[in-house]
Length: 313
Image (tube, rainbow, N blue to C red; front, side, top):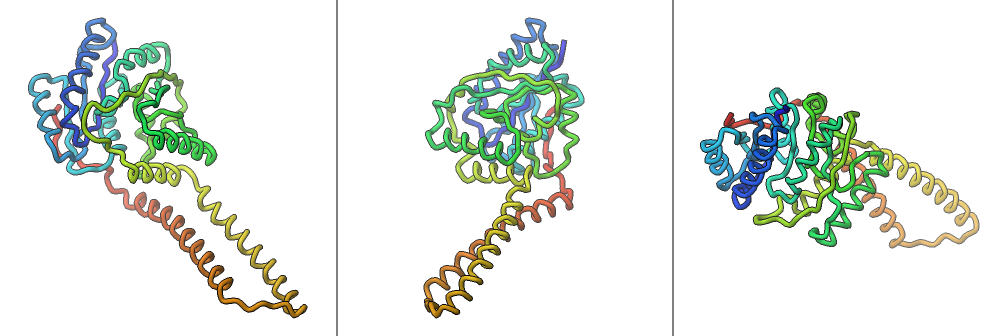
């Protein structure tokens, strides 16, 4: 029998965490009783710098049940780093790891099906949403656009898959060899190359609390994914520069011809519009290049991804 660890990143989830832990414990207990999982299987909650009662709830459950473990990060390091903290803490002892968000909008009952896929030889099992009717119109369509855009940029993602997945110990160890600080997990996992499977489920509304991914964070997450995996934005700047230079050459010859024909028209508006457009393009180009330079600076410094304040083993 295999040991399963369920890794649950949590940020200010006091309103749902009790329900989450009870449901996950129930699911794991059934699998242990059915002798599908080893009795040492557990749940690890990673508190990503919560300022509410999240850590207090984790400690309470840990005192009652040693199968509930907890990591408290010293501050909010971000969802992706909280996941990595959980994976690094479990990779030594767990034969397979499931990651799932604390709000349980991803159906935890699917874990049983994931384990069946693992038993069938899959080392990575993706949880894929086949129904997003609970999402807003904007979120559904922006998500679809996001997947299409990244696919055009050569970044292979699993559509409608977030961070609900099962991974074997070998897959987790291989994933943790990727040392970059700007880590886009959803893009890295498909690169590992192990046998994979998909399980489908319906995404449900939050029981309580607020989403930890408002529009601002969603846009930042999307931009991080693009710049972490592709240099196409920089190549676009090069293409734009070539196009602008070519257009400038055409306008140069056009100016000579109109001057020679005596058709020159003096105008302040056309000059100012040209200056503003070119100035705007230059600022955008510098911003994109600066984004990549900033990422290089972050990687060179090699600062730790997170700091653990407390660990309940």
